[in-house]
Image (cartoon, rainbow, N blue to C red; front, side, top):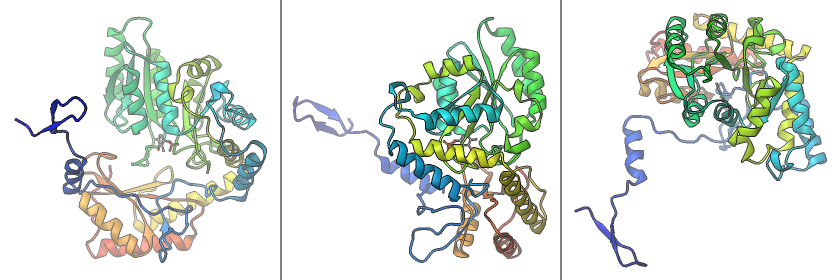
Length: 411
Ligand SMILES: *Cc1c(COP(=O)(O)O)cnc(C)c1O
């Protein structure tokens, strides 16, 4: 019999076999998968708050270096002065202000859709949108490497989930074929992919996917998290770069990366947005994001599409090109350079060695990436100088030549 404990109110005994957190923590440690929160970072190249460290940061998604820009700061401060700090309630209960509405009209114009809806984060935008647009009986078809928020949203919706191998159009076609044969006429089929994959830095074959979604009459959601501000004309993302953005039913993005602020957005037709407002539980049952966050996101979007945005994208591309040239690796389309090492311990050791040299490059491990494909994930920014890139490249070069960093090939 398992150990028993006495309930002091009823006097009855009950088993005390409940799992303790220690057992899971030990398990994670044994597999080198235990994570510890780092020190707070102050920005792209910012100092860590620990006293003596001043690390060069290659872990930030602030691709254009906007998070610390004077324009975003003053937009946030002005919004605080005007509206206060907290929004005090859900948007449904008048928690929103013109800061939220202005951002949404701008986002719709930016993405070329009729409407857009702002969420507290990209994560809640994904979960809220999927729960709103699909339910049991519908089907979601996801790329195997889709972000956790898309998988979680698909699961929470209750729809049937089918997965195609990364960027594999033939398999996607087969899944669409069998799904469309089996599904009732009025059920929805939604294909989900990212424009730039967050841990691999590669892009999805959007023209091919759009072709399939059109042929099979499916819906398409594209998560532009790592492409907003980085790819496409005026930084509008990969969907716009392909010239077929009007075929994408739901354009999703976060303002927490290149836009330099925080919060997520979904842009779609007015009717879809109306439905999402009515059914996205992460939107309805959550306090509206702070006014300042929305105002800064709007300022970020304005810079992204301006000549300054173009200029920053040029610097960013120059930085990516310089690093790849120095490392003699192929240049990725966006600003993420993964160096695949394989073992979790190899990635941890390489990351620690760089840390010792004053450089932050995170080790990415399971479950963020598949087992055996642990990596260093370098993200570059327009805020890095050429000197910063040289510093990173020479340290990586040193790790490679001393055998401490052995590349295991492309993802
Ligand atoms: C970062 C990210 C998100 C989540 O956005 P947050 O605003 O950080 O919650 C969603 N999708 C992808 C692909 C991401 O990389």
